[in-house]
Length: 189
Image (cartoon, rainbow, N blue to C red):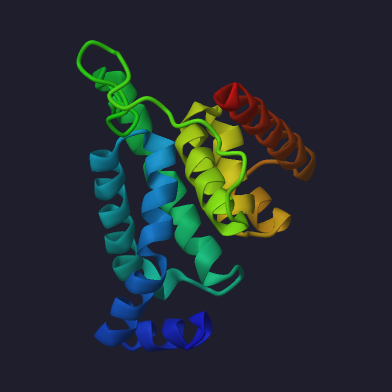
């Protein structure tokens, strides 16, 4: 079922349509929230708050953008608010997925690149490395890279979603990708 049909059913209060919507977008929303707020626990709260906003506000969805873009916009607004609240409260962010122990040493040292691996294994490893390095990008760069390269949104949707100019979106994407390449190169060395 496409997103348009889901919206129609949601307008009618169809609970199964909401379940399908959550199954379709939950992991994507959670991933974007986590990269925005820096904490899994806060990201889960933001994502849950987003779903509540969707239920309460589906009647206001007019279809001027795609449902996916609207969901991401709702999430980004809530995530930015939560991130600001967390900074003001002085709460630390997660410890980068437990990669460091209590003495700030590697809990498990990074594995070096293997010279001869199957292409799919190399791609999966590269994807995992890129995902692990994403939190090191500046906030706007990280958001643009995730929305464009991970979520596959069009440039125009990212511009609308983040409220930035097309030129700014291109610069942030270029710089974010360049920073990721540099981080990957340093990770290999």
